[in-house]
Image (spheres, one colour):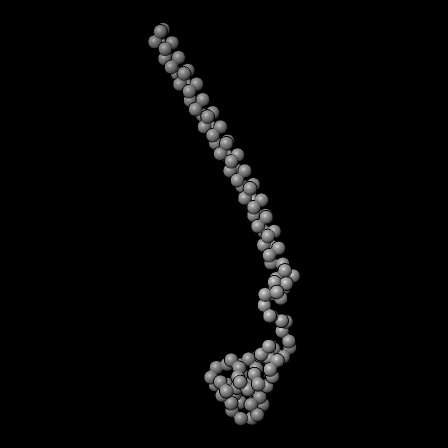
Length: 126
């Protein structure tokens, strides 16, 4: 009987130690979960703040004010736009053009670019 009582006491002690170990592990995991949730919430707040900052920095009015203050950029005038034909004349392949634009004679495109820019006038370069 003493041996069985001793074995039961050892088993009871082992069960109590196992339960204590499991509870301690559970508390550690719960603390880790709480820490991760706090970090997630802080990250979500930081992301929200960064998105608001990006929206502020990308504000078109703010960008226009910065461009006006730091550059000499001006809105495009209609004289600065090229038609598709003018573009091909100015920047096309090294071929010849035939037709009304060249006055009925063949003009190499590489020679047509200065002609197209001269025809547009000095306002095209501004």
